[in-house]
Amino acid sequence: MAVNPQLFPNGMPVPFVNEMFVLARDGVEFEVDKIPGAHGGSVKAKGTIYLSNIRMVFVANKPLGNFTGFDMPLLYVHGEKFNQPIFFCNNISGLVEPVVPDDQHRAIYSTHSFKILFKEGGCGTFVPLFFNLIQSVRQYSQQYGSRVENHSDPLQAAQTPVDEMMRHAYVDPNDPTRIFLQQPTPESQLRRRTYHSQPVERSI
Image 1 (cartoon, helix red, strand yellow):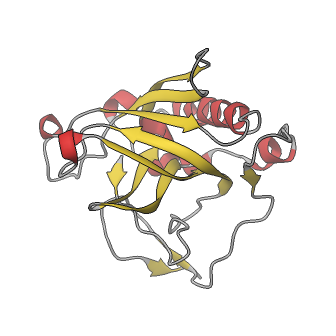
Image 2: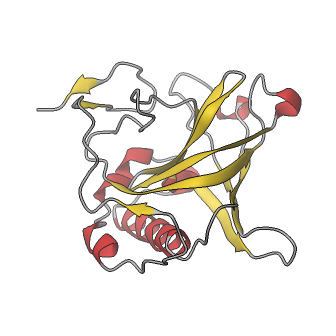
């Protein structure tokens, strides 16, 4: 995970090299714990979830203190579950491991628990795509011999083919999820190469 990932001025996450965005889902409420500087350590905010072949990114509609967004590498997510409570809205809950810089010790970083609440519209498009994608990412990761427990490079997930999955996605008319059949193209061609280096570079 990474707090406050790099964003374009329009709110779209700055992509990594070889990253493909699959969908965007507006109108969600996002909850996450153990955020430095947050009141009580937890954050609850409304905004948009972006899902790619590498990660899931929550971008808040407006900053909450110093919090603007939260980045979750799919290879580091586990314990994910779709919940359908009787009296509350449908949601996905789960855990995400921290992306630890090479020069720092894992022990000083905590596992985060998160929840995505679908408060506006259905989730019949988002939920199957999310679970299919995360399963595919894990299968390809195992094929290439990396294990989440060993804290593999989260960018390895970019090897997962998602084109076919997107073309055959079920579209729920009650779900406002937008599927990116073509990649969104902000004016900038900048691409990130790692989770830890701040500079981005222009793709060729």
